[in-house]
Length: 151
Image (tube, rainbow, N blue to C red):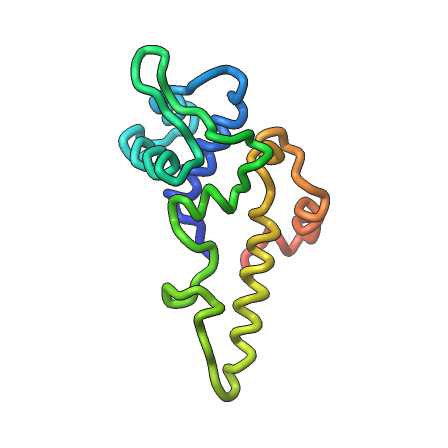
């Protein structure tokens, strides 16, 4: 699975908004500067997130962006889907829409299991990530030293 730059930037911007949830709107320029993201690229991402119902915005001197819902109710998966589409696809298709025959028949089960695993990991909320309170089952996946190495 690949996480695109667009998805990475969207999650980072959403986390910045989650951390400032009670501080009022954040300007895109401030988020871009804090996260080292191109302002113009970030504006496009925030626009997608606004159209996707994850953020709201207001123009003007006191304007900016804020989360449309509490950070506890927005998952990392939602943010990624909003800017990149389905979390797991095969040749651009969702796994349930595929079919295989012969020795490849069980491959569909593998793709579905992969999708379940990705959903479990990326199902963490923005609030959990922003507060560095990842669920133990997520943290536990990283305790094997091989999790940190390239195969």
